[in-house]
Image 1 (cartoon, rainbow, N blue to C red):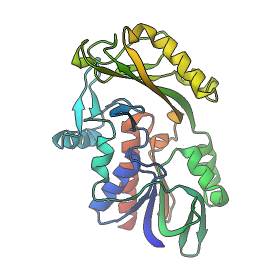
Image 2: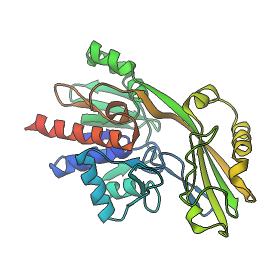
Image 3: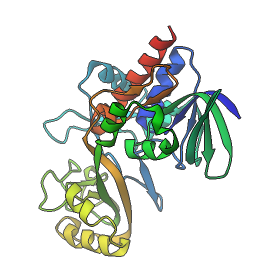
Length: 316
């Protein structure tokens, strides 16, 4: 199969990249390894309940991103969540609502994992885990930079040595996240967030505003980056047992019905690339994501939008 433009990754960076390109008449084909879209703006289902197990909220400071958020607000896929002094936003009803909205009208092939990338005289050749070969003239990669470099392993010579060195210096820290479904109300404040805890870097309960008499509680916790790195390979049962013990003050009289763990290997970039994106001189290979724009949702979004502008300008 031969296509003009392929984007690897259907997180917020890849989806906004596709969205901005489409406005300038550039069609793209998005490949996503997961079942859903959104990347770290992900939602997990436990029984009949949805948990925002990745990025729990985002902020908007750059005018270009603020404009996007205002549009999402008009479309009712985000809502203000001012649990602190920051002006925060979250997806409505869940964090992946934004990604689902952006994916509308786009060609997204899910559960399609690219295993290798090579180049021929006509462009790029992608091989999937299923053994399928997909060709394209322009390749845009929005997955975390270490994953992108693994995919480009056989073609690293195409990257300027200085650029490659800078890309290899980009570092991320992991995050171990736990989702707990409770019967009954938790002790988490009505804002839905515990702003300070002796262990967790994040504790939230999306049902807290329903009051103490609610039937269920949905608690999400994130372990700190340094602790997550040290204990990343620990068995799931042991990690959840530690989380449950640390959560006791916030569980109160609630009864845990089910619990799940998610390992975010590239949760937060701590040493980003110095520019908002990468694009080769020919405009045929590009990279974007939070590894370029900086940590958090806004950084990833601005990176994808900036890469789109560069491609359009390169065409002109």
